[in-house]
Length: 284
Ligand SMILES: Nc1nc2c(c(=O)[nH]1)N[C@@H](CN(C=O)c1ccc(C(=O)N[C@@H](CCC(=O)O)C(=O)O)cc1)CN2
Image 1 (spheres, rainbow, N blue to C red):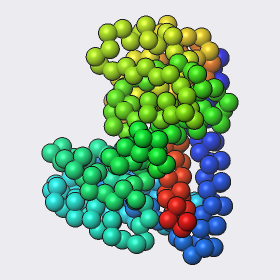
Image 2 (image 1 turned 120 degrees about the vertical axis):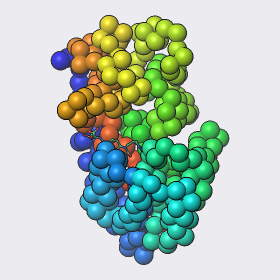
Image 3 (image 1 turned 90 degrees about the vertical axis):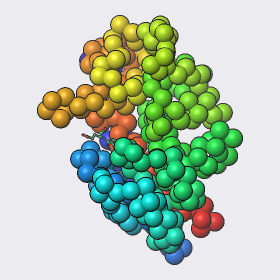
Image 4 (image 1 turned 60 degrees about the horizontal axis):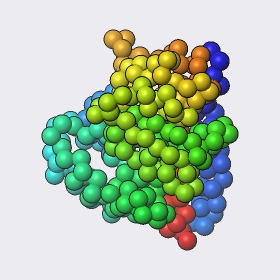
């Protein structure tokens, strides 16, 4: 392995320690930030992520509000909990864990959230602000990726970035974040309709792989020295994570974000940043 590691665990730990001081400052002003989560169903992966979010909150002094519904919950039952979180003064920001069970209209649920409490940056108003260049919460995984690159000194400005995938949490918002003036990257978005993925990958300085297709990024498609971030989550028969990036890529790339241990912890850290920033905005 020749590539250097984009260490998400260590970077997230540094961000969390910076946040603890900001939470203390808020508390000194009488403001207690509180993160709410709504988990619907019994997917073990989603439960693990939600529990992790609350562990993180405890570490930095953010209060936790946990709501759960069974997989059989109706659209109306889910929306009732969303309305309750909108009204709860202890909940200064919240997320609805995705994906929601089949048959639930996810967009309707997200639209119902109070945009001022959107901790994920995935509410239509937050995404609209991102398009318009107005300050607001940034989508956690895309901005976590930007922070991971910056804090390791990887140049984003002017870089040719290829994003593989167009899902709601990563692929769709990633180019919006990377093409802001503050990041100034040139982005190509690839997806299942892309004719020649390999040709696009070969000219990329940075690859964000969020397709959910095991080992779709192969060593022969990576430019020597490129930064490659693996965000794909598939599971083998033993339940072990298999990423989008072939292990041989580490022999060609200059930087790799491993999976696990790369982008995942940054997603969680950015969520806490959004909660603290929303509380700071509210406190003036
Ligand atoms: N409402 C949201 N739902 C989902 C999001 C999101 O940002 N908001 N993203 C993903 C899941 N996710 C956060 O919710 C998430 C994924 C992965 C990790 C993480 O730390 N992963 C570890 C490995 C975990 C394992 O072994 O299974 C790592 O990469 O080191 C945190 C959060 C979909 N839903």
